[in-house]
Amino acid sequence: MKVNKAFATDKNSLQWICNLLDNAHDFFVLKNLNGKVVHVNKRLLETLGYTADEIDDYDYFFYHIIKYKEVGPYEDGLIIELTAKYNIKMSFSIRFSPIVNSGGDKVAFLGFVKLRSYCKGKAEDYFNFFKYPTDVMDMTEEGVVIVDNRFNVVYVNNRACELFGLKYTKFINAKFMDIIKKYKPDASENNLINGEKIVIPSKGSFDERVLLLKYGKLNSRHWKTIIVKNITEDLKYQKLIEQTEKYTIAGEFAATTIHEIKNSLTSIKGFIQLLQAKHKESSTYYETILDEVDRVLALIKNYLGIVRSNEEGETEIDINGVINQYLLLFEAEIVRKKIKIEKRFGDVPPIKMDKNHLKQLILNIVQNSLHAIGENGKIILDTRYYPLKKRVVIRIVDNGGGIEKKYLKKVIEPLFTTKREGTGLGLAICKSIVELYNGDIKIFSKKGKGTLVKIILGER
Image (cartoon, rainbow, N blue to C red):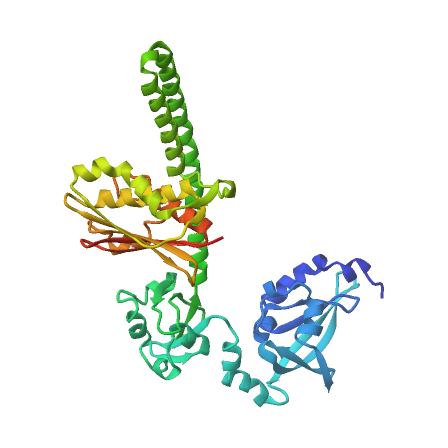
Protein backbone atom coordinates (compact mmCIF):
# COMPACT_ATOMS: atom_id res chain seq x y z
CA MET A 1 0.00 0.00 0.00
CA LYS A 2 1.23 3.45 -0.89
CA VAL A 3 2.38 5.54 2.10
CA ASN A 4 1.57 9.26 2.20
CA LYS A 5 4.88 10.68 3.57
CA ALA A 6 3.41 14.10 4.27
CA PHE A 7 1.23 12.58 6.97
CA ALA A 8 4.21 10.77 8.48
CA THR A 9 5.91 13.95 9.66
CA ASP A 10 3.29 16.70 9.77
CA LYS A 11 1.17 16.68 12.94
CA ASN A 12 -0.89 19.63 11.69
CA SER A 13 -2.31 17.41 8.96
CA LEU A 14 -3.66 15.09 11.68
CA GLN A 15 -5.15 17.90 13.75
CA TRP A 16 -8.69 17.09 12.71
CA ILE A 17 -8.26 13.59 14.11
CA CYS A 18 -6.78 14.98 17.36
CA ASN A 19 -9.82 17.24 17.77
CA LEU A 20 -12.20 14.31 17.36
CA LEU A 21 -10.25 12.21 19.89
CA ASP A 22 -10.33 15.00 22.49
CA ASN A 23 -14.13 14.99 22.38
CA ALA A 24 -14.31 11.22 22.93
CA HIS A 25 -15.03 9.62 26.32
CA ASP A 26 -12.64 6.71 25.68
CA PHE A 27 -8.83 6.66 25.84
CA PHE A 28 -6.75 7.07 22.65
CA VAL A 29 -3.12 7.47 21.57
CA LEU A 30 -2.26 8.64 18.05
CA LYS A 31 0.98 7.79 16.24
CA ASN A 32 2.20 8.96 12.85
CA LEU A 33 3.50 6.61 10.18
CA ASN A 34 7.02 6.80 11.65
CA GLY A 35 5.73 5.41 14.93
CA LYS A 36 6.08 8.71 16.81
CA VAL A 37 3.36 9.58 19.33
CA VAL A 38 1.78 12.84 18.16
CA HIS A 39 -1.22 12.99 20.49
CA VAL A 40 -2.68 11.58 23.72
CA ASN A 41 -6.34 12.48 24.01
CA LYS A 42 -7.73 14.74 26.74
CA ARG A 43 -9.62 11.97 28.56
CA LEU A 44 -6.51 9.80 29.01
CA LEU A 45 -4.40 12.81 30.08
CA GLU A 46 -6.93 13.72 32.80
CA THR A 47 -6.91 10.15 34.10
CA LEU A 48 -3.12 10.31 34.35
CA GLY A 49 -3.33 13.67 36.16
CA TYR A 50 -2.08 15.94 33.33
CA THR A 51 -3.41 18.60 30.97
CA ALA A 52 -2.45 19.39 27.38
CA ASP A 53 -0.92 22.71 28.52
CA GLU A 54 1.78 20.76 30.41
CA ILE A 55 2.97 18.89 27.34
CA ASP A 56 5.32 20.18 24.62
CA ASP A 57 6.31 16.86 23.02
CA TYR A 58 3.83 13.98 23.20
CA ASP A 59 6.39 11.37 22.16
CA TYR A 60 8.78 12.39 24.97
CA PHE A 61 5.85 12.60 27.39
CA PHE A 62 4.64 9.10 26.46
CA TYR A 63 8.00 7.33 26.84
CA HIS A 64 9.80 9.41 29.51
CA ILE A 65 7.16 11.07 31.71
CA ILE A 66 4.42 8.47 31.94
CA LYS A 67 7.08 5.78 31.22
CA TYR A 68 5.32 3.54 28.72
CA LYS A 69 6.19 -0.09 29.51
CA GLU A 70 5.03 -3.26 27.73
CA VAL A 71 4.09 -5.94 30.26
CA GLY A 72 2.89 -8.68 27.89
CA PRO A 73 0.45 -9.71 25.13
CA TYR A 74 -3.30 -9.30 25.47
CA GLU A 75 -5.69 -10.74 22.86
CA ASP A 76 -4.74 -8.83 19.68
CA GLY A 77 -2.90 -6.10 21.58
CA LEU A 78 -0.65 -5.48 24.57
CA ILE A 79 -0.86 -4.99 28.31
CA ILE A 80 1.03 -1.83 29.17
CA GLU A 81 1.92 0.09 32.29
CA LEU A 82 1.83 3.90 32.51
CA THR A 83 2.98 6.06 35.42
CA ALA A 84 0.49 8.73 36.43
CA LYS A 85 1.28 11.81 38.52
CA TYR A 86 2.76 11.19 41.97
CA ASN A 87 4.34 7.97 40.70
CA ILE A 88 1.09 5.98 40.66
CA LYS A 89 1.31 2.95 38.34
CA MET A 90 -1.70 2.25 36.15
CA SER A 91 -2.33 -0.85 34.00
CA PHE A 92 -3.95 -0.54 30.55
CA SER A 93 -4.51 -2.65 27.45
CA ILE A 94 -3.69 -1.08 24.06
CA ARG A 95 -4.38 -2.08 20.48
CA PHE A 96 -3.22 -0.09 17.45
CA SER A 97 -5.17 0.05 14.16
CA PRO A 98 -4.29 1.99 11.00
CA ILE A 99 -6.26 5.04 9.87
CA VAL A 100 -6.68 5.34 6.10
CA ASN A 101 -7.84 8.21 3.95
CA SER A 102 -10.42 8.14 1.15
CA GLY A 103 -7.75 6.98 -1.29
CA GLY A 104 -6.94 3.96 0.82
CA ASP A 105 -3.60 5.33 2.04
CA LYS A 106 -2.47 4.89 5.62
CA VAL A 107 -2.16 8.26 7.37
CA ALA A 108 -1.66 7.29 11.06
CA PHE A 109 -2.07 4.60 13.71
CA LEU A 110 -4.75 4.90 16.39
CA GLY A 111 -4.23 3.20 19.73
CA PHE A 112 -7.38 2.08 21.57
CA VAL A 113 -6.60 2.15 25.31
CA LYS A 114 -8.57 0.54 28.16
CA LEU A 115 -7.94 0.88 31.89
CA ARG A 116 -7.27 -2.37 33.75
CA SER A 117 -6.17 -1.42 37.32
CA TYR A 118 -4.40 1.12 39.55
CA CYS A 119 -1.22 0.83 41.57
CA LYS A 120 0.39 -2.07 39.82
CA GLY A 121 3.27 -3.38 41.95
CA LYS A 122 4.04 -2.08 45.49
CA ALA A 123 0.92 -0.05 46.10
CA GLU A 124 1.95 0.84 49.67
CA ASP A 125 4.93 2.83 48.35
CA TYR A 126 2.65 5.28 46.55
CA PHE A 127 0.02 5.57 49.26
CA ASN A 128 2.70 6.26 51.87
CA PHE A 129 3.71 9.29 49.83
CA PHE A 130 0.30 10.82 50.55
CA LYS A 131 -0.05 9.36 54.04
CA TYR A 132 3.23 10.90 55.24
CA PRO A 133 3.66 14.21 53.35
CA THR A 134 5.46 16.01 56.18
CA ASP A 135 8.92 15.37 54.77
CA VAL A 136 7.99 17.31 51.63
CA MET A 137 6.08 20.05 53.52
CA ASP A 138 8.94 20.65 55.95
CA MET A 139 11.43 21.33 53.15
CA THR A 140 9.63 24.49 52.02
CA GLU A 141 10.60 27.99 53.19
CA GLU A 142 6.95 28.89 53.60
CA GLY A 143 4.64 27.91 56.42
CA VAL A 144 1.66 25.68 55.58
CA VAL A 145 -1.44 25.53 57.78
CA ILE A 146 -4.45 23.37 56.84
CA VAL A 147 -7.78 24.00 58.56
CA ASP A 148 -11.20 22.40 58.41
CA ASN A 149 -14.49 24.17 57.68
CA ARG A 150 -14.61 25.46 61.25
CA PHE A 151 -11.08 26.81 60.97
CA ASN A 152 -9.63 24.26 63.38
CA VAL A 153 -5.98 23.55 62.57
CA VAL A 154 -5.65 19.96 61.33
CA TYR A 155 -2.11 20.23 59.98
CA VAL A 156 0.80 22.65 60.42
CA ASN A 157 4.35 22.23 59.14
CA ASN A 158 7.49 23.00 61.15
CA ARG A 159 8.16 26.22 59.24
CA ALA A 160 4.81 27.73 60.26
CA CYS A 161 5.57 26.90 63.91
CA GLU A 162 8.95 28.65 63.56
CA LEU A 163 7.46 31.75 61.93
CA PHE A 164 4.81 32.15 64.63
CA GLY A 165 7.20 31.18 67.41
CA LEU A 166 4.69 28.58 68.66
CA LYS A 167 5.08 24.92 69.51
CA TYR A 168 3.23 22.34 67.44
CA THR A 169 1.10 21.38 70.46
CA LYS A 170 -0.12 24.99 70.76
CA PHE A 171 -1.05 25.05 67.08
CA ILE A 172 -2.72 21.73 66.30
CA ASN A 173 -6.50 21.57 66.88
CA ALA A 174 -6.55 25.26 67.86
CA LYS A 175 -8.85 27.81 66.22
CA PHE A 176 -6.65 29.44 63.60
CA MET A 177 -8.42 32.82 63.72
CA ASP A 178 -8.00 32.89 67.52
CA ILE A 179 -4.24 32.58 67.01
CA ILE A 180 -4.22 35.36 64.41
CA LYS A 181 -6.34 37.74 66.48
CA LYS A 182 -3.78 37.68 69.29
CA TYR A 183 -1.54 39.66 66.93
CA LYS A 184 -4.19 41.51 64.91
CA PRO A 185 -7.60 41.85 66.60
CA ASP A 186 -9.42 43.00 63.44
CA ALA A 187 -8.17 40.09 61.30
CA SER A 188 -10.86 38.23 59.36
CA GLU A 189 -11.21 35.16 57.20
CA ASN A 190 -12.18 37.32 54.21
CA ASN A 191 -8.92 39.25 54.41
CA LEU A 192 -6.99 36.02 53.86
CA ILE A 193 -8.20 35.97 50.26
CA ASN A 194 -6.19 39.10 49.38
CA GLY A 195 -3.51 38.56 52.04
CA GLU A 196 -3.45 39.44 55.74
CA LYS A 197 -0.32 40.98 57.28
CA ILE A 198 0.41 40.42 60.95
CA VAL A 199 3.35 41.44 63.13
CA ILE A 200 4.84 38.86 65.50
CA PRO A 201 6.64 40.81 68.27
CA SER A 202 10.19 40.01 69.34
CA LYS A 203 10.66 37.71 72.30
CA GLY A 204 14.05 36.68 73.66
CA SER A 205 16.19 35.66 70.68
CA PHE A 206 13.09 35.73 68.46
CA ASP A 207 13.24 38.91 66.32
CA GLU A 208 10.13 40.83 65.32
CA ARG A 209 8.80 39.66 61.99
CA VAL A 210 6.01 40.51 59.58
CA LEU A 211 4.06 37.57 58.16
CA LEU A 212 1.81 37.50 55.10
CA LEU A 213 -1.03 34.99 55.35
CA LYS A 214 -2.93 34.02 52.23
CA TYR A 215 -5.20 31.25 51.05
CA GLY A 216 -3.42 28.61 49.02
CA LYS A 217 -5.09 26.24 46.58
CA LEU A 218 -6.53 23.00 47.88
CA ASN A 219 -9.07 21.08 45.84
CA SER A 220 -11.35 20.08 48.69
CA ARG A 221 -14.64 21.26 50.15
CA HIS A 222 -13.58 20.14 53.60
CA TRP A 223 -10.10 21.64 53.95
CA LYS A 224 -8.56 25.05 53.43
CA THR A 225 -4.87 25.81 53.31
CA ILE A 226 -3.15 29.02 54.41
CA ILE A 227 0.33 29.83 53.17
CA VAL A 228 2.50 31.78 55.66
CA LYS A 229 5.37 33.83 54.27
CA ASN A 230 7.97 35.88 56.15
CA ILE A 231 8.06 39.27 54.37
CA THR A 232 10.16 41.12 56.98
CA GLU A 233 13.22 41.44 54.72
CA ASP A 234 11.06 42.33 51.72
CA LEU A 235 9.55 45.25 53.65
CA LYS A 236 12.99 46.41 54.84
CA TYR A 237 14.21 46.39 51.24
CA GLN A 238 11.11 48.29 50.12
CA LYS A 239 11.65 50.85 52.90
CA LEU A 240 15.30 51.22 51.85
CA ILE A 241 14.22 51.95 48.28
CA GLU A 242 11.68 54.53 49.49
CA GLN A 243 14.30 56.15 51.72
CA THR A 244 16.77 56.27 48.83
CA GLU A 245 14.12 57.96 46.69
CA LYS A 246 13.52 60.49 49.46
CA TYR A 247 17.24 61.27 49.67
CA THR A 248 17.28 61.75 45.91
CA ILE A 249 14.35 64.18 46.12
CA ALA A 250 16.02 65.94 49.05
CA GLY A 251 19.23 66.28 47.05
CA GLU A 252 17.39 67.75 44.07
CA PHE A 253 15.45 70.10 46.35
CA ALA A 254 18.65 71.21 48.08
CA ALA A 255 20.51 71.81 44.82
CA THR A 256 17.65 73.91 43.38
CA THR A 257 17.21 75.93 46.57
CA ILE A 258 20.92 76.60 46.97
CA HIS A 259 21.16 77.78 43.39
CA GLU A 260 18.33 80.28 43.86
CA ILE A 261 19.64 81.54 47.23
CA LYS A 262 23.13 81.87 45.80
CA ASN A 263 21.80 84.04 42.97
CA SER A 264 20.00 86.33 45.43
CA LEU A 265 22.99 86.63 47.76
CA THR A 266 25.31 87.32 44.82
CA SER A 267 23.06 90.24 43.79
CA ILE A 268 22.95 91.55 47.38
CA LYS A 269 26.73 91.22 47.65
CA GLY A 270 27.19 93.17 44.41
CA PHE A 271 25.03 96.09 45.59
CA ILE A 272 26.80 96.19 48.95
CA GLN A 273 30.16 96.40 47.19
CA LEU A 274 28.85 99.35 45.16
CA LEU A 275 27.68 101.09 48.34
CA GLN A 276 31.04 100.33 49.97
CA ALA A 277 32.86 102.10 47.13
CA LYS A 278 30.47 105.05 47.34
CA HIS A 279 30.60 105.39 51.13
CA LYS A 280 34.21 104.74 51.97
CA GLU A 281 33.81 106.27 55.42
CA SER A 282 31.59 103.30 56.35
CA SER A 283 33.80 100.67 54.76
CA THR A 284 34.19 98.70 57.99
CA TYR A 285 30.43 98.19 58.30
CA TYR A 286 30.13 97.07 54.70
CA GLU A 287 33.02 94.68 55.18
CA THR A 288 31.20 93.12 58.12
CA ILE A 289 28.00 92.80 56.08
CA LEU A 290 29.89 91.09 53.26
CA ASP A 291 31.48 88.66 55.71
CA GLU A 292 28.05 87.84 57.10
CA VAL A 293 26.65 87.27 53.61
CA ASP A 294 29.42 84.76 52.95
CA ARG A 295 28.82 83.09 56.30
CA VAL A 296 25.04 82.85 55.69
CA LEU A 297 25.70 81.29 52.29
CA ALA A 298 27.94 78.67 53.91
CA LEU A 299 25.34 77.96 56.61
CA ILE A 300 22.58 77.53 54.01
CA LYS A 301 24.69 75.08 52.02
CA ASN A 302 25.30 73.01 55.13
CA TYR A 303 21.67 73.20 56.23
CA LEU A 304 20.35 72.01 52.89
CA GLY A 305 22.52 68.93 52.89
CA ILE A 306 25.71 69.58 51.01
CA VAL A 307 27.51 67.22 53.37
CA ARG A 308 30.70 65.75 51.97
CA SER A 309 33.39 63.55 53.45
CA ASN A 310 36.16 66.09 53.06
CA GLU A 311 39.07 64.83 55.12
CA GLU A 312 41.17 67.86 54.09
CA GLY A 313 38.80 70.04 56.13
CA GLU A 314 39.26 67.94 59.26
CA THR A 315 41.28 69.32 62.16
CA GLU A 316 41.66 68.61 65.86
CA ILE A 317 38.80 70.58 67.38
CA ASP A 318 37.66 71.30 70.92
CA ILE A 319 34.09 69.94 71.11
CA ASN A 320 33.15 72.03 74.16
CA GLY A 321 34.65 75.19 72.66
CA VAL A 322 32.79 74.84 69.37
CA ILE A 323 29.46 74.25 71.16
CA ASN A 324 30.03 77.37 73.27
CA GLN A 325 30.88 79.39 70.17
CA TYR A 326 27.77 78.51 68.23
CA LEU A 327 25.35 78.82 71.10
CA LEU A 328 25.94 82.57 70.73
CA LEU A 329 23.93 82.41 67.49
CA PHE A 330 20.83 81.61 69.54
CA GLU A 331 21.48 84.17 72.25
CA ALA A 332 18.76 86.60 71.12
CA GLU A 333 16.06 83.90 71.04
CA ILE A 334 17.25 82.44 74.36
CA VAL A 335 16.91 85.85 76.04
CA ARG A 336 13.55 86.58 74.38
CA LYS A 337 11.97 83.30 75.47
CA LYS A 338 13.71 83.33 78.88
CA ILE A 339 15.16 79.91 78.22
CA LYS A 340 17.76 78.46 80.58
CA ILE A 341 20.79 76.76 79.00
CA GLU A 342 22.59 74.35 81.32
CA LYS A 343 26.03 73.16 80.20
CA ARG A 344 27.42 69.96 81.63
CA PHE A 345 30.69 69.67 79.73
CA GLY A 346 32.88 66.70 80.54
CA ASP A 347 36.61 66.24 79.98
CA VAL A 348 36.53 65.57 76.25
CA PRO A 349 39.81 65.34 74.29
CA PRO A 350 40.13 67.08 70.88
CA ILE A 351 38.51 65.07 68.12
CA LYS A 352 39.48 65.10 64.46
CA MET A 353 36.53 66.21 62.35
CA ASP A 354 35.32 68.99 60.08
CA LYS A 355 34.36 71.97 62.24
CA ASN A 356 31.47 72.80 59.90
CA HIS A 357 30.02 69.32 60.45
CA LEU A 358 29.97 69.76 64.22
CA LYS A 359 28.50 73.23 63.76
CA GLN A 360 25.74 71.74 61.59
CA LEU A 361 24.87 69.17 64.24
CA ILE A 362 24.63 71.78 67.01
CA LEU A 363 22.64 74.27 64.92
CA ASN A 364 20.04 71.75 63.77
CA ILE A 365 19.37 70.04 67.07
CA VAL A 366 19.47 73.11 69.34
CA GLN A 367 17.19 74.90 66.89
CA ASN A 368 14.70 72.00 67.15
CA SER A 369 14.79 72.25 70.95
CA LEU A 370 14.19 76.01 70.85
CA HIS A 371 11.15 75.47 68.62
CA ALA A 372 9.80 72.75 70.93
CA ILE A 373 9.93 74.67 74.25
CA GLY A 374 8.04 77.72 75.38
CA GLU A 375 8.99 80.52 77.74
CA ASN A 376 11.01 79.58 80.83
CA GLY A 377 11.98 76.30 79.22
CA LYS A 378 15.26 74.50 79.75
CA ILE A 379 17.93 72.95 77.52
CA ILE A 380 20.78 70.80 78.87
CA LEU A 381 23.95 70.22 76.82
CA ASP A 382 26.05 67.34 78.09
CA THR A 383 29.37 66.08 76.66
CA ARG A 384 31.20 62.90 77.67
CA TYR A 385 34.13 60.81 76.49
CA TYR A 386 34.31 57.02 76.72
CA PRO A 387 38.01 56.06 76.39
CA LEU A 388 37.47 52.30 76.05
CA LYS A 389 35.26 52.73 73.01
CA LYS A 390 37.01 55.97 71.93
CA ARG A 391 33.64 57.63 71.55
CA VAL A 392 32.41 61.14 72.20
CA VAL A 393 28.76 61.49 73.19
CA ILE A 394 26.89 64.80 73.03
CA ARG A 395 23.47 64.84 74.68
CA ILE A 396 20.94 67.63 74.11
CA VAL A 397 17.90 67.48 76.39
CA ASP A 398 14.87 69.79 76.44
CA ASN A 399 11.63 69.91 78.41
CA GLY A 400 9.51 70.85 75.41
CA GLY A 401 6.37 69.29 73.96
CA GLY A 402 8.08 66.07 72.90
CA ILE A 403 7.36 63.89 69.88
CA GLU A 404 4.38 61.59 69.44
CA LYS A 405 5.32 57.91 69.51
CA LYS A 406 3.94 57.30 66.00
CA TYR A 407 6.30 59.96 64.60
CA LEU A 408 9.41 59.04 66.60
CA LYS A 409 10.84 56.60 64.04
CA LYS A 410 10.00 58.90 61.13
CA VAL A 411 11.52 62.21 62.28
CA ILE A 412 14.94 61.27 60.96
CA GLU A 413 13.63 60.41 57.48
CA PRO A 414 14.26 62.99 54.72
CA LEU A 415 11.36 65.39 54.02
CA PHE A 416 9.33 64.24 57.05
CA THR A 417 8.26 67.15 59.25
CA THR A 418 5.40 68.11 61.55
CA LYS A 419 6.33 71.81 61.40
CA ARG A 420 4.31 74.08 59.14
CA GLU A 421 7.43 75.74 57.72
CA GLY A 422 9.89 72.87 58.20
CA THR A 423 11.84 71.23 55.37
CA GLY A 424 12.23 67.81 56.97
CA LEU A 425 15.94 67.79 56.14
CA GLY A 426 17.65 68.84 59.39
CA LEU A 427 17.82 65.51 61.22
CA ALA A 428 18.38 63.56 58.00
CA ILE A 429 21.45 65.74 57.38
CA CYS A 430 22.63 65.17 60.97
CA LYS A 431 22.29 61.42 60.41
CA SER A 432 24.47 61.67 57.29
CA ILE A 433 27.12 63.65 59.18
CA VAL A 434 27.48 61.28 62.16
CA GLU A 435 27.75 58.29 59.82
CA LEU A 436 30.85 59.93 58.31
CA TYR A 437 32.48 59.54 61.73
CA ASN A 438 31.37 55.96 62.42
CA GLY A 439 28.74 57.36 64.72
CA ASP A 440 25.01 57.39 65.24
CA ILE A 441 22.20 59.65 66.35
CA LYS A 442 19.50 58.42 68.72
CA ILE A 443 16.30 60.20 69.70
CA PHE A 444 14.25 59.50 72.83
CA SER A 445 11.06 61.44 73.45
CA LYS A 446 7.74 61.39 75.29
CA LYS A 447 4.79 63.54 74.34
CA GLY A 448 4.42 66.41 76.81
CA LYS A 449 7.64 65.56 78.67
CA GLY A 450 10.50 66.51 76.37
CA THR A 451 13.17 65.08 74.09
CA LEU A 452 16.70 63.68 74.40
CA VAL A 453 18.97 63.63 71.34
CA LYS A 454 22.16 61.62 71.71
CA ILE A 455 24.95 62.28 69.18
CA ILE A 456 27.63 59.57 69.11
CA LEU A 457 30.93 60.30 67.34
CA GLY A 458 33.78 57.84 66.88
CA GLU A 459 37.14 57.70 65.11
CA ARG A 460 37.41 56.91 61.44
